[in-house]
Length: 395
Image (cartoon, rainbow, N blue to C red; front, top):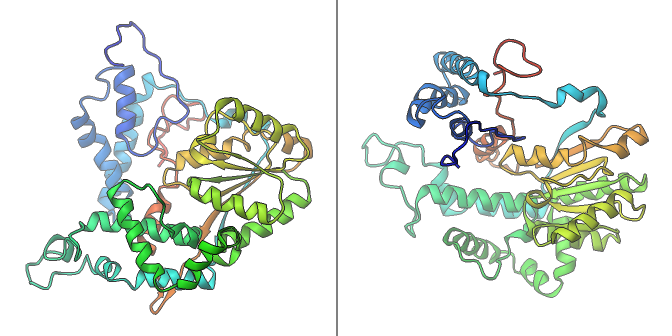
């Protein structure tokens, strides 16, 4: 795109920044080449100080340096950055109730969760920050224990077990292996899951003989128990409900649950063609018979307007906050149905409650808190030429 020969370049986006500040540099350097210097200069002057100031362990000096970098960055991009937010039309939009719902794990989930935590690999991970036994002065993960017994790197191990624990927190059945998996890490995850389920033969047998009943049974998911109550409450009032999930496999589980409950619903995911998508949205918005729609966050979170919805459930929140915000705005930002009913749109974000171990809550709480931190929008480009500018950058 930088090779396009043109006198003026104008970029239009609803989300200029999602994961890191380098994305902002990329867009600005395309629109106004050199306005933020080279990428290396940008990281030294802006990106690194700001990110260091955001850390939980940041010192007062790091915080002050980070705030100073934010203000300098906002000032630098101001001449070429024109921003308008929903605040301009907030008086025309219905206010929404946005809630985080903590769902306790079921007894079976607790047992499976604890089984994963008691594994040799997780014990290795939990001790990774300790000083190495060889007295080198380095941590275990940077010295003699940088891999597990099978030669898997600690970093890969960390993300593998995060994925496993997240699956358990959503629905135990998600740990069942999937045919046709090609990625090395996913193969390793499936191998771990198979090992875990050796201790639960009755569950494995039920998944084989009564797959539909197993998937739709709330005893395997605390989130599903809460969802069951939410749906009964809102559908009884003829409210329109959207359920978003990042995982299509989890959508399969939710579909089985809805069928078992005898609910009329529609589904939209990546396999739905464009013509069908338009019809699904149209039917949901206008039909009095379809009050529930299961939606893939990535497939339905952009470009579609479920203006009939007044209840949104993020069953499986994503790592990227921008994706969840876009999904919520498919309904809550327009919410014509809600305005007509004179009701506030409701947003529910599902979070699995902590599993209890011998020392209280599990020690994976810290990385999960770090993940929750990603659920906050990045404010680094606020300030400057914005409609609601207060004269200073927002921290």
